[in-house]
View: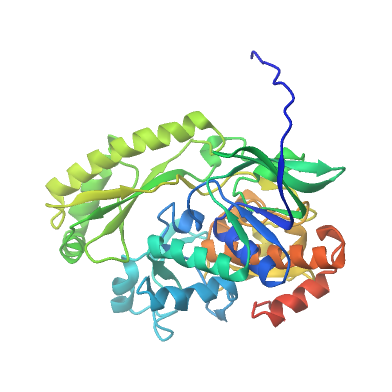
Length: 445
């Protein structure tokens, strides 16, 4: 491969702050709010023009899972969102009495909203047989609420800014280089939190990481899109009453690769549904693959819509209203921290002395697991790039509320490290745990 030498460039330092958070997705949003509430200066850097990550830009409108069968474990900032969204008419969710139910009529009621589906790792199949504690949101209103919470907390927000590498002082990250319409800039900080989703900052400063060697074993990429003017009840009735014909019809489309996903989900708005175009054997770190998903995803969207309009009652006058502005990336780099969480840890509900967040298993409604601080610790990472195996990731950190919980823990840890004048790695975990609980966060006793 040919290469060129870039000339040295003087980069202006445009800000100095206590905590720099890279990435405004669920984890980064929560980290910035949590750190700022703990009275340190925070700058949140986000490459898109909005916060929320997959919950907004990816059209992943169902926030999974706040509870397991033993009760609610995701609280704190992730839980604060629900009443704020509800007050704006932007959230739908099962009542406390409905959660955990296996009644057929309730399963049917919530099935279309993705509230009941989960992956049973014992039978290795998707099932719909329990109403889970999930929240269906309006992504546009979610953006507004995230903005409001960040500003109310007192954090500085920089949108349309792409952080490309960490600034190192020995073995410690002390800022980031970012690119925007304002040019190349540097922001210095006492602590950097990598909530980029892909572990970009950690990788840039040499933190070891894991990435599935085979694209075939990576979780797929997707390009969601929304379709309006659908008679949803009529379409679902057709599916129920003609189940064998319906699924045979969908299987025939899979064979000729017309579209990758044959199920549509309820949007928060009446008459609107969401489709999930899924792409396997693609890397979230390949610009060629990302381009292919954007281009081919839209072609598949057109073919799928044409098929539904011709063959599924209720879709006759349907039309596309928008495609997600962000490609759905389920899995990317995962750092190798001081501890690597495994699927065995999760299935055994293993307890850790340095627990700093809880997670509910996507595969078993009876499982809640500890996320140890050592999985965040190398520079402070939050979200889906924390230290865990491929199998463990699928069971927990692919879920948005869990990413928010880990983000909140990272944000509080960063603030406490700044105040204590220590690196995050030397922070006393007991102080972090006590502070989190005092601020309404849930940790198992």
